[in-house]
Length: 327
Image (tube, helix red, strand yellow):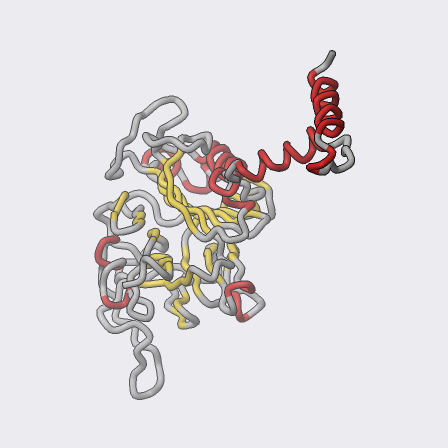
């Protein structure tokens, strides 16, 4: 006799000898579906924690991965993922300025007194604050020229601070508008929709375009491809999520070098980004680009600088988180 038949027999006997207490008619799914549902209800749902892209409330996370995009406490890749549409987040671009950002002269022209600043300076000066809040996260972005001016397209809260290559090099940014309307974009030059030209940072070396990956080693040249191999990059998925990544052996964290956990060459940029997107349910990589590499990569999260280099940088992309991180 099967276990299910035994249960049925016991249930029938209970009804025969316990009519006074009242017995409900038997449901053939009672011992399967209902008990299964109860067990599932009692068991906490951990999918959102393991797969943030499926959580509508997900805003931002930081972790480390190996070069397959697998989370690893000793990973060389320092990663920030976030949802641009989260109401818990806000964004700003900061630059190496001697003057207060957005200040105009008596003719109504934006003042741009550029000075060399390294990552730790540009993420912590007075211009880095947004509504008196300090950033929860930051990544280095654009190159500077010989007079400390950023080279690419940089726009901070709608105010432009750009250089000679603003129409030639790709830029990464988050649009204006209500949180639910925000979009992350990567492309060369200004966007056709004005709301998309709100927070943009320049860079160079676009290696994903419309979902197609390209090995850009030849485009970068010998030095940037194989010698200056510490990397700083941004990617946008077809689901609208953003991945920011810095790969640097000099990072201020535990790193264990191995075949799948080392400096990134351009032919495996897709491996790590696709792994991160897949493992976190973020969709597929749609567009991706490099920021200033070599002596400039920097990454900051929650009061700690994980990567810092001695080179001055043109701009940084800043993220602010409301609530418990307010200052």
